[in-house]
Image (cartoon, rainbow, N blue to C red):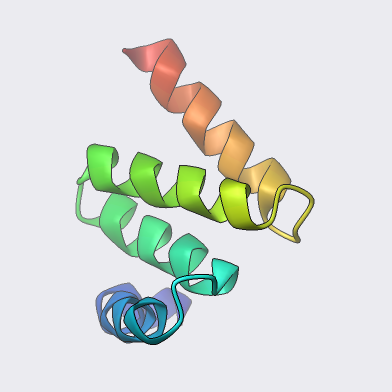
Amino acid sequence: ARNHLSEAGEWAKRASALDPNLAEAFIIQAHAEASIGDAAAAARDFRRYLSLAPRGWHAKEARKALHARSASS
């Protein structure tokens, strides 16, 4: 998926529409949005991931991304 972030992001959006509690879909969406420069959407999805999986596999990464965004604002 890393080499096809746009396509992965689209599939993740479909998955999250079917199951809004699917944390992994939100982390994929966040990466896809960040890759195209949509920082606000990426932050929204990192926060959504953290609300669903505060101790999930990607929690540290999501917190780091949000912290970096807030530090640059």
